[in-house]
Image (cartoon, rainbow, N blue to C red; front, side, top):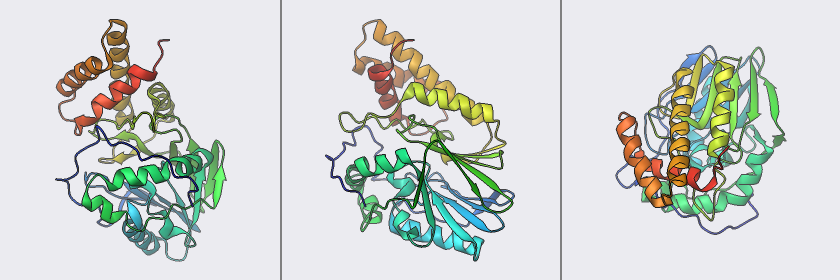
Length: 310
């Protein structure tokens, strides 16, 4: 359980969800590689891509969706695929749409986080719960009755799960999108990247000073360089369609653009507001097929405030 009660987080700059479909995980798991399944997000706001990885003796669930109802649905789908195999659960990061259904798995699966994830959940979990409840009535409904649960196992740096004939590596790679991002690499070929990557969606920079400023743009770019070096054949983003390693380069190019422009404008004497407005306008014109441009300005402000020139 989360022992702290931080100040509520502000949602300024976050998407307007009042016109969005309910944030409900739905549909059957789709096999994207041998033994690797994804319940697609179908590009619904606040629905993540959920992973289920099967080995001969155990199975791993990656992310739960928003709240206990989504968690119960994911658990049902995992049990259907896994049969009597032992279940593990891990999360790509602590944000509510990815992990606030974990309570359903307590006792049904072994929950594994990295140490940083556990710390962020304890320190920020209640604040994010309150913020997300304020996004829309539908989100608030899904978050009713949420309990923040500690993991059964924690690790530092990297951990390996042997599911029986299938090896899964959990690796802490933050700070980037959050202070404690985690990637999951299956058999050195399938990468679950969480919100480090999103397909045709502007990357989410959760920069909400003074309550949460742990997004690290420069660190994020460095992480993407590391992910590109892994040369995964299949990439499962936090949101958007499953794709290949080209997505890593696309997102890196965007973040590098924002960093370069934020530095240039700051050094030219532009204010944070002026910088955010300029980058917002130019990025919309450059990445015309990407959705959720409301996140551009927050990324620009994060780089403007926190990124020191090399």
